[in-house]
Image 1 (cartoon, rainbow, N blue to C red):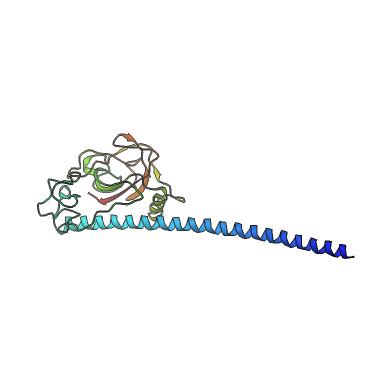
Image 2 (cartoon, rainbow, N blue to C red):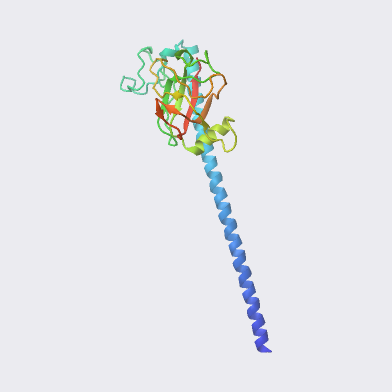
Length: 237
């Protein structure tokens, strides 16, 4: 009798242990899944915030150029992206057409008053006047007359690219960079000339996005397929 009772108790204990193990495994799985989901949400929120910061910078640039052209009378060819100390040492963006009082310098207090930015989710920011976006500005033809002032960024992180395209309602989930199958873009820095012509887009007859994250064909004649580039028009001509 004693042995049977002992065996029954042992069986009950084993059953309880098995249930406890199963519950622990289920709890561990639930915690792991929640953690993964939480990390994913945090990453998405971070990317959305970074995309928002970039969009705010683009908006500031666009607004500054509008003020300079409308209120200060700056011509398109007089706009300068030269950065401090504004003594010619920033050779990338010295524009000899710009007024000596810096009224057409976007990063000078006398001009646009915008502070230059760099972003850790992409390579150096470039300002160019050698590309056109079909459907915007004075012409849809690939000529210097149709080129716009644009901000370009190379090798943008995929997560930020997707956040940018989602914010601009470009494509559908997961909002991958737009694949550009042909055409040659230019990242030549703007120093007052809109010479040359290039296009980021497949068709000169379709209105293309004002800004977007793309997978370009070639840039400056070099194959950039598979890279993530961001562009935005900051001044339509």
